[in-house]
Image 1 (cartoon, helix red, strand yellow):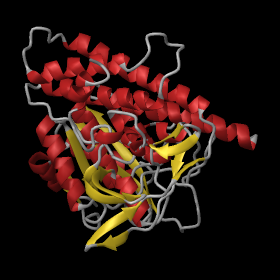
Image 2 (cartoon, helix red, strand yellow):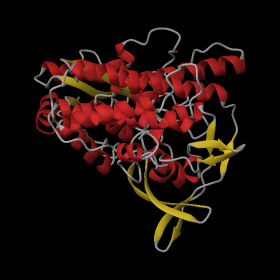
Image 3 (cartoon, helix red, strand yellow):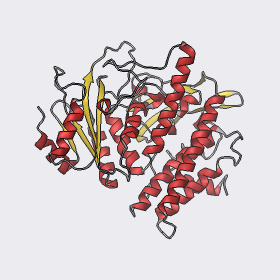
Image 4 (tube, helix red, strand yellow):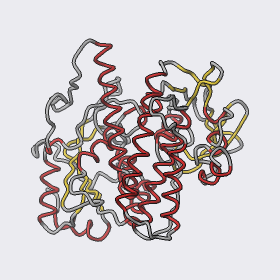
Length: 422
């Protein structure tokens, strides 16, 4: 039986509780990133990791019940992340429908909320969408990545847009699967439920697997090769570009997402009503919004260059971060996107990458790093140039190629203002 009083004490002092046997579920690096995001943005997010009863006596809502008891015993208000069940599966290609642990086990998460979080009284479903559908290729995030991503999105005030993108891509994936298999779109889970009906709070975190993040919807997939040591440091060798899906529908979806993200940022700027503010963060939010909008044609029916659409999404994301900083009267520092595909979100640490004789050190997301280390195929953002697929960073499309959408050179605003959008 979990010691509720001890958990309350941990949450009050550190914002998290790691019970026995859960220490390896989240890495030290991820815990540090989580703590920083929660502390810097004052996000009421509480992580409660406990091993469920091995005999299953707690039932599928064991974690949800525990979170209720913790809050009733004096736990702080906010959004709680807990664990209902842990399942282990053989590495036989079984689909993963839940966030995972480093050993491949799957988690049925418990999520509960008390009081407002980011000004909203119900963020549970958005949190579910990010955790269970926010990984590259639409896969659930590993738990450690997921809690960091959720903290970052809440801190930046971008949770709603991230969750909506995940849901829409998930719907596209289900429609595609239904069209190719001729079967329904309901997906079964280890507990015997499916996604055809309502999930309910007792199965928080259980959402259908599979959606296409914009890079995959674009029809842009790349190959990964085994990392190897060069000059005493691990260097990831990147593959040549490969285009294996139809692009038109993906390009249209990407443009739709870009317009939606820019529109959402504009609405939040209007709602913020900080027109009299002279803060640099407020100015940055306005600049990012202006430039993101100028990258997109005024005619909604006009074609949008895929890389400009990605650039608008990155600028809108940074505009949200700047707006969040302005609201809290804090300095704005733009996040660094994943160099291999900025649609994956934030990149962490610099890694040595090599392709066609060119080497670069750049931040990549943890999912891309794991794929390369395991000789799997990461999603690299590719485009077709003169009829041939190329990695975006090998094209002449600026400022995206040389800056890595801000991964290599963070000041996209200045580059755009001095260049294409003068």
